Image (cartoon, rainbow, N blue to C red; front, side, top):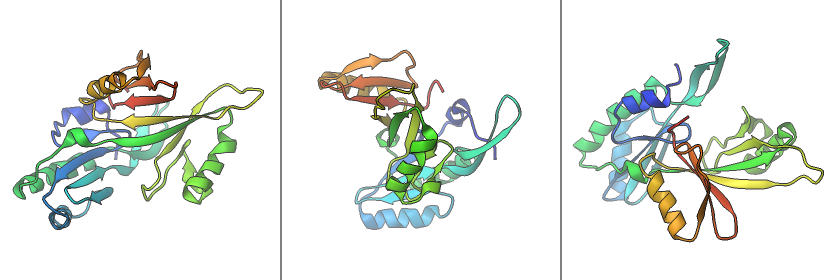
Length: 221
């Protein structure tokens, strides 16, 4: 199915869900682990990932076969949100409501790692092997753990240096309507904004020692 644009996802009006890096994310509050199990049994198939905790259930919706056509008409297949995921989200929310489970979409988040490199082909397989145990999990320029136990690792191109420099930074994906609050909290805790020209897509914060984090949203992409 066709990959949906961010605007199309927003236009779907899914109040219980937020688009983060690649997929739709929802959190539903439960009274117990047993309540969470009953909810997961009720929503059935169609979910990419489900996490059950004592007081909530996190659900991720994403299509691994989403299709994007570039300006030359070439098709690319990659994990993204499609109409299938929108339909599943619309099916799940009423089930949660019928079970008395409140949605907390502002609490969802996704954590990713980014590494600057001038030689993606050389370093990509190494990090796939180290992080997931298999070099073939370096695909499409990213390292993705299908079990979800290791954060996604993506690579940002940089110029070559006589002495290669390893430069990691972290990406924190938050709901678009949480980003300003999260950035303000970081500044209030001693950080500073170092780059915001592409906000709300991402804003770069640095801690008092200069270590950086990107606060990312699905808007402006």
